[in-house]
Amino acid sequence: MQQHAAPKSLTSAMLRDLCRRFEAVMQPSAENFNPLPAAAYLLDPSLSAMLLEPEQAALLHAAKTYVIQECKCFSASAASAPTEGDQTASFPALSRFRFLASEIKSLERAAASAVNITDGAVTQLARYVTDAAEAKAVDALDFWSSRRATYSATNHGGPT
Image 1 (tube, one colour):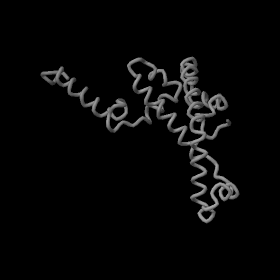
Image 2: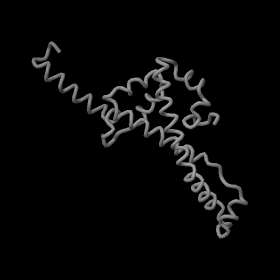
Image 3: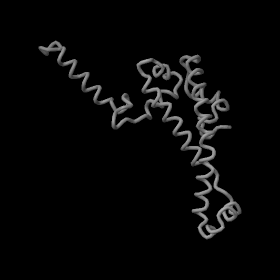
Image 4: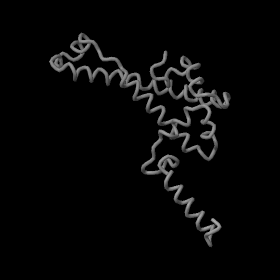
């Protein structure tokens, strides 16, 4: 910096460049925004406090939205396939097309449970934000393993 005649213009240019480079992970309004890093920060109790700062409200909202969306996607894909009897009873004309009947039944089940999954995930996410703030700096793996049953809607593969 001492080599440059205009350190203020240099630092301004560097700041603009940094903002442009990190726009995809720091600005939810950016066209190429990726919410995954924000969600990772949110779900790590040792880092989540950074997203609770007032100036990070938009990033926190994007992270929460992404986590809830992922919970819905996971619940839809984890919906069990109906048995053959269910398929032919509900869709007798589709008995020749078992795969299509199975997909239709899975979509119906997912749609019926999506509201409950979303409500459960929203509630558990709100509880988690409070718990993480109270826990202060803890190891993320220890935090989540000790609370598997508490956060069943956001814990893929854990007990319900």
